[in-house]
Image 1 (cartoon, rainbow, N blue to C red):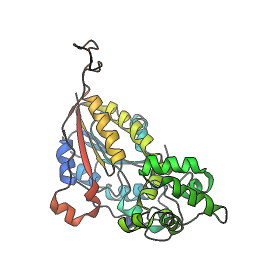
Image 2 (cartoon, one colour; image 1 turned 90 degrees about the horizontal axis):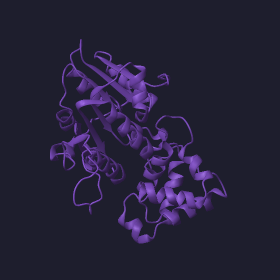
Image 3 (tube, rainbow, N blue to C red; image 1 turned 60 degrees about the vertical axis):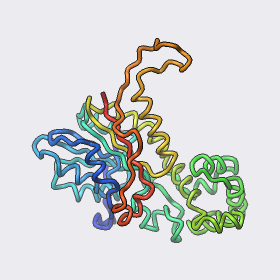
Length: 320
């Protein structure tokens, strides 16, 4: 497990407005004596509100994040509460809990996607609106988005843009990237954004205010292995829930939401027999109960004050 790194960073700079906060707290059904996990602590917006509701002598919050900046911010903001902050990707939540000697938890929250701080800090390379190094690493370790753009072949770049960004012009954009890097490496966010725009038909450029949005999403997902992490993390966290414990997940795009919806549906399904079987022969039992049949979305008051909430969807499941 990595140790937190707080060098050259002021935790006060990490801004975070928690999305769907009221709905998450209701979904978790927090018990003061319970043990809860926030797998994506960020600036500790959700974490602080969960921790406030815990009995300092009996309850406990475990807050995880892979971003060292987030770990520094969460550590500073949770110091007054019964909370432990760990720098680790939530895909390894089960390992983190094992190392802390925790067998079961009573609830967990995942707030997926990019934090406001990561987007607002241009130097992190997540935004196509400001010129900065083409980075996009949440953990600040490993290959960057620039590394992918400068080393992957056209077919692999196309697959990433198509599968992770649902980009209809993936082949054309990948071609522009491969051609451009023959003259000079692609190293900045605006350099990539301009290449994307140049690959778009005029009608597409007029239709989309920010034609690079899908490409940046796709590269970010690839750099951080987000869908693999989500798949593994959901399994490990759900397995760690005590009976009656709840898992709340906030998604921000269709790929995440589809993965969560399908996983929750399987856990809440008892029979796995083929539909043509007249009677159940598998003897299966559901592992969970859907608390939300349909995703919860932000109310008008939140939509007015927090732009990030516009695409947020919350799903909740309870372990049986």
